[in-house]
Every structure is written in structure tokens, then in C-alpha cells.
Image (cartoon, rainbow, N blue to C red; front, top):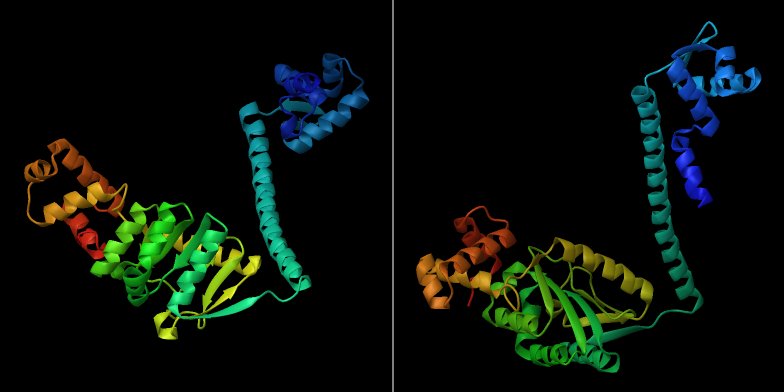
Length: 337
């Protein structure tokens, strides 16, 4: 309660004026022009005390002094300037705090590096072969469910191998809650029929996938403590005969997680699956030359619903017209059956 009363009594304190100075400033406003003696009498204080406070008000720029006579400046101008200066100081302080927070993140990385150094060399395991890779991930998912898996895939061959040989067990693990998967892959891979089908099934099972025009390299993280790196950064797994390294150290996992999140933020969500299939459906039918009425009859919905789905697809694709939406949808593989 005492703090609340003090805040109410000194509303201009954030601008550099205490309660005594506010009272003196108010007296100058009311008198408009006054000598030091007149102001001392107005606020019932000694001339010496008033003199020090007046000097402070002059330095702040809210009062002018001319040959021993004090004149008040207009409050909107004088106090507005003080408020602007205060806001500038707060903004600068905020920038310094942001810089400090950035330094804290760097210090945390240093701490993690030192911790890894003191606890000895972190284990590195060489994995050779696609079967070993996918079985290793499945083993981690069974041992510590649900396993959070983040994976970047730069090429179509890796996606084709996944679709042909390994999609089934992973989809089963997703449906059983053993793992949660997010993947970034090149948009051109969606034109591969087997890949399109596997991606659709992964999304239907609860996985999340997004596309980029280009993914820089294959890598993955599995949970908080395991990272997968190719034998050569920038390569894809089939070219390297599925030779890769599994590193069990939090600092590497953290770095790759940060890289993945950056790619994920730039990537484009896929439209089909549990939530986006309806919008892609109307684009596929429109590409076949069907009118809104014909699409509505084929889907068993109203024409209004069809047009709403067109609007949803255009918003998702960033298109200004249906034609643009169709072109962009084709580029991303939305129209593939």
C-alpha cells in the first residue's frame, strides 16, 4: 500500500522529478513568472532549498531562468522531451539486455563444451548401411519412447529408399506413439510416386514434413543426446554408401537442432494429410477442367465450401489467383495423385 501511495504521489518521478520538485514546478506553472523568494513563499520552503531545486529544474529543461526570474516552459513540450529521452534510455537498456542474453547463450555453449571435455571424449559410432541406420533409430524409439526425431534429407534417392523399404516400420512406430518425426525434404522429391505415397502415410500417422527448394545436407537428431552426421557434410546417404556417424553429445545435438529449426522455419508445409487434403483436392479437380459446381457435386459439398477451400489453398500457397495457385501447387507436387 505504501508503494502504491508513493507511485500515485510522484507520477513524474520516472522523468527525473521527485515530489518536492513537482510541487515547485506546479507553483511556477501557476505563477508563470516568479523570483526565487516568491517561489519559496509559494511552497513554504527556504530560499536556499528552493534554489537547489530550481537549478535542477533548469538543468532538466522544464524551467527557464532570466535575470533571477523563473519562467515555466509549456508542460507538453518540456515533459514530452523528458519522456522521449527516458524512452531512448530504456530502449538502449533493452538493447544492452538483449546483448547480455546473447552472451548468456554463448556462455551456456561454453559450459556444455567444458562439461563434455571434462567428462571425456564423447562416443562416436560409425554406422554403415541403410538397414543398420533405420534399425538403430527404431531401437532408440523402443528404448526411450516417444523419441523426437528431426531429419533433413537432401535428395530423392534417400526418400525413395525410405519409401520402398523402411516407411512401414516407421509409420507403425508413429501410430504406436514410439516416435515423433519432423522432416525437411526437397520439393522435387514429391513428384516421385512412391515418395508421395510414403509422405502422405507418414503425415496421416502423425508425422510432420515440410519442403525446401534445396536442403544443404543430410543430418538428424534423435532425442536430446544423439546426432547423426554424414561421412561428408553436404552429401547424401546413398552416395556415401549410407556411411554416417552417430555422435552422443548434447552440444552437437543442440547445434543441429538449431540448424534444423532454421530450415523448418523457412520450409513450406505440405497441404495434404489430416488437415490440408481438402484444399489440395479442389486444386486437383480444377486442374482437370472441372467447374466449381462440378467439383462440389463430385465431393458432395456445397459450392460455397469449394470456394472456401480454393481460398484456403491460395492463402497457403501465397497466390493471388487460382491460376497462380495451380502453378505453385503443381511445382510443389500437390497435384500428384
